[in-house]
Length: 111
Image (cartoon, rainbow, N blue to C red):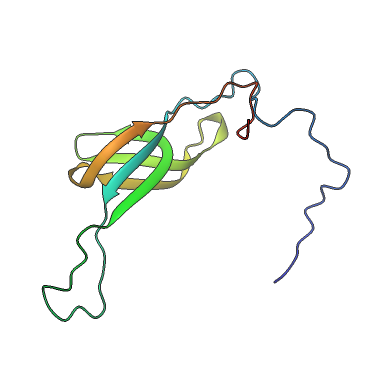
């Protein structure tokens, strides 16, 4: 394992980490999508040896909810520069989509 110093000595938080600066809240809703993924089986010997369900849970910012795909981004970039790590899930395999609620800015996740 390699340890890399990122130069944060002496840097302290001035807030509890739960509140955002005014106007910096993401405009995209945070959702949990449960969906049936395809999978690859290296050594399936018969039709009786199949996996019955392979449910995947993906959390992300809702980028697109189109007629064929739902798209979730792991990161929303600043200043309208786009997204990172976008997952595109066919609607035909989606079991459910749940809107995740935002915590009150005065609370921390552990309260």
